[in-house]
Length: 358
Image: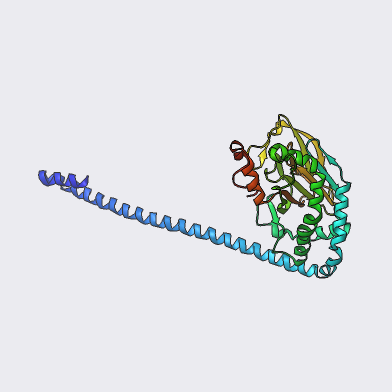
């Protein structure tokens, strides 16, 4: 624009316009200076943004290192505390004794079918084994890498106090697989078989026979506190059976266990993901207390379950531990079961395996 004005002045050349041309030249130079300043400011702003990103990344690394250091200290302290307890583990983890106790506990428990097939198993473990198991819950620092009320540790775990790793590995690999799981499948045989036959009619004559092969999956210790709430739902479909082991400590309240619901106009979940159900359609039928040395086991076929810890629950630093796992088909069995379904029904059972905390 200024160039065109100057060209016009070169043609007209009136002396009276000389000062105006000088002013325009000065203004153009000033604008160029402003542009240079703006470019410099943009470079500075970009540099500041880059430094802010790096500072945030460094802060996150410092936070992670601080957490890791606290975890290492907690593990070292626990190892020192449990030094003598480790020597007593062979007697506590007496395999024939523990497995026989678990089988008898499941055998004595009652199967109920309203609002869904479920079993509450009291005194599931020998008292000394249960006490050692609770004592061996990893330090809370090892759960702190997740947000509050989403904290968990996969079991068996490779990082933690030696005492904790030993007894929890024994629980999962020996006790649950060797005694609890087969006893529970036998306890739920009738409703489980009926449900499998409904979903896979070709298996009606022998629902638990080939290709059905069940195993334990998704085992984890959950840490929950004030304000925890999970709405009525059914678990992912390939988890045929859900197991909750209540890890209540001495003198801990039995409040805020697990709620079991019937569902109005109930229907099968149409995906393998967790199936969330409108609470308005749910009717509370059973409130299972959070009772020490107790297992709640239910068939993931109908109805719903949920849980809630109030915001004002006491004590203020409440820590509630539960071991949760599921019993469902192996990967090979899943492939065979999906292949057995008519094409129009496969979409209900196919897709990415997802969970609440993924």
